[in-house]
Length: 148
Image 1: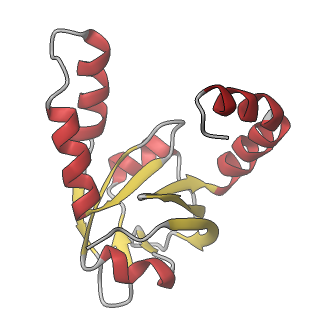
Image 2 (image 1 turned 60 degrees about the vertical axis):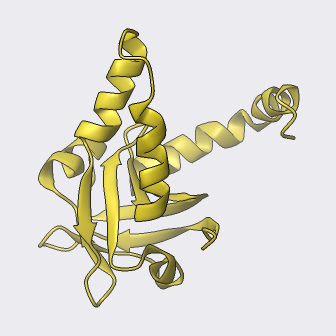
Image 3 (image 1 turned 90 degrees about the vertical axis):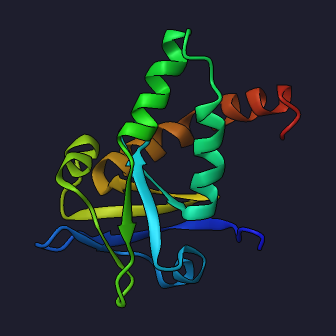
């Protein structure tokens, strides 16, 4: 089965029980279990199980003799938790991940190809504003990589 592309940004609320409703358009692909882990830029990454298994396999082959790869692997793998998606399409965000990402009540769920990112709404807006401000420089760097 091919992974469908996750795209778009959606505003949602974390309820008093630390549950977050996943946008309905993503639920079919996510099925009934996902992996949530620390992401980059102080957000959370949410992976469908198949995409997570592929990433974890790659991380497991990184050289342990290099401090940077050890650190990144620890960040991603030790911070990960598999989470059930309930019948209403909600996931439970553990306290340590809520604290890591600084999640308040209002969050943004952003679709990024093979994963979702969960951001505190204020942090997302600040990040997005900075990225938009530097979009010409970013496009130039992507051009050098042959992407854009």
